[in-house]
Each structure stands twice: as structure tokens, then as C-alpha cells.
Image (cartoon, rainbow, N blue to C red):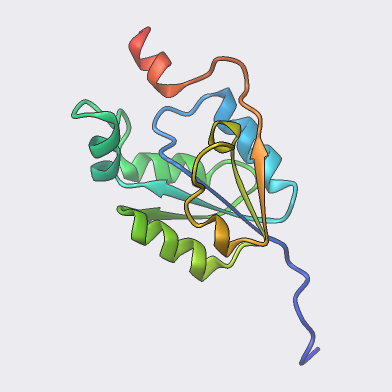
Length: 135
């Protein structure tokens, strides 16, 4: 089969995935239906920078482990800076980048490296910040 091109569709999703909830799982299930799914996860330091000193709730190692065990996830990588995120997306060269609909009016980091950006509608009121605030 030498010379045959792969028809694999590569899909990218990224986020902190600090406290997994239904919205995360539905996002992953949605994205994985398109093809081979790679998930990028923020490092602990990056989450602290954006979410504050009491975050993340779960360590990078735990979040990476949880994500790798979800049906439909083919690989998981970490990133600590915007440049690392862009580099990971560029290297993966996704056909599809799936992001939450809250980014429809914002810049989608690395979106220009994908053939298509698909916005996933928010599921209910699920939010890690809300879950931790209300506990």
C-alpha cells in the first residue's frame, strides 16, 4: 500500500478540564465522532495564571490520566503557553478544531492551522468554576 494517502481525519480539542463535568464529556463525544481525537490540556501553571492560585483542583497528571481514559480520546498532550499550544496544533495539523461556542466572538488560538473550526454549543450551565464555587 505504498504511496497511499491516509484518509484519517484529525481532530483537536483543548482546555483545562480541571473538574470533569457533563459538558466536557459531551464535547469530547461530539469531537471524537469526526475522527482521531487529540486533546490538549493546560499545565497546572497555566491554569493558575488564568484561574487563580487555588486552581487547578486536579493536577495535570490526574487530568491527563482522566482524559486518556475517556472513550473517543486517542491522545493527550500538555501545553504551558500560548506558543506551545499553537505549536502543538500546528504539529498535529488538524482537519477539524472543535471549541466551545463561547469562543465564536473571540480569537481561536491555532484555528488558522485547522482546515475547519467547529463551535460546540454549551451544555446547560455546567462550569468547573461554578462547580467549585458552589461546593
